[in-house]
Every structure is written in structure tokens, then in C-alpha cells.
Length: 201
Image (cartoon, rainbow, N blue to C red; front, side):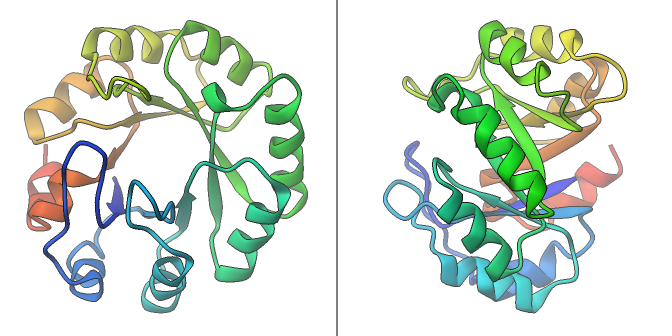
């Protein structure tokens, strides 16, 4: 279970919980995702720094990463991993940033939204692939596409389900589709106590 710390989202979510209290409440997760994008998600590097100073959990810096400078910032602020979104990176950019992250000692979660994304992601021989059910542009959730993509990821690559997980039923359905890890943001930010239910699902 990857618990996400974010203060807002384009879907209309606004956090009402104190970040420090949230970090304590989700300490039973396997890892923590911290959204640092400031405009749409209300994130900041200060939030990442707070997380790194407050928890021993592995931390994923989640942002629209398009430069090596952002990777260096992730390392300096205490992140253990970064998100690379296949759909926003052009020809050669994904490969360059993936290699740069690895050279800095960062793990990489490669995010995909469709079959073309997945083809590009698998060419990297990644350790982890995240399948996001939410379209980057329309913000719509497509569970069917997510399940199909999860089933196309070869064994040996950790399959991470992202977005739209509201409760145990969603988690169980995604596990049946092949997901091995689950990144949960809005639902946990609204009710950190939900983590116990998800862990026992």
C-alpha cells in the first residue's frame, strides 16, 4: 500500500487534514507518495522535506518530472523514488530521465495510461509500472482499460494500480486484475483510517 500525501487535485479535492497528522496516521503503509506539483495539486518541496523528516517509509516524489534538475531535487530532499509519466515525455526523454534517475540511485515508477505508453515503458525493462485509471486530460476513470493494461505487464515487474481506489472492493478487483501494489490518494486524505480496511482487504 502506497499512501499518498497531496493537498489538492484537479478533480476538486482539497485536503482538510494536517500533513503531519496524516503522516502519523498512515505510518502502517509500505511506502509514501508525496505530490510536489504546486499549481494543480498544491504540492511543494517543503511538503516532501516534511515527509522525509517525519517518516522512515520509502518516499516517492510525484510530479510532472521533465528535467534532471527535478531528479537532483528529489535526491537532495530525501526521496527514494520518482514518478515518470510516459505520456508527457517525448521521444528519448523517457529513456534519458529513466537512466539519469537510476544513476542517482533513485527507483522509478513508470506511469502508463494506454497501450502505447505501456509499450514504451516496457522497453526500459523497469522494476515497477504504474497503471493510472484516470485520463490525464479528461480526468475520467477507466477501470476496464486499467485492468487490461495490468494484465499485459509481464511477471517480474511490480504492477502498481493508481487512482480511483475508494475502498476494499476496488482494491480486491484490482488485485484480481493483477495489481500487486496500490497507490491511494484522495480516499486516504479524506479518511486516513481507511488504511486499516485496505490493508486487511
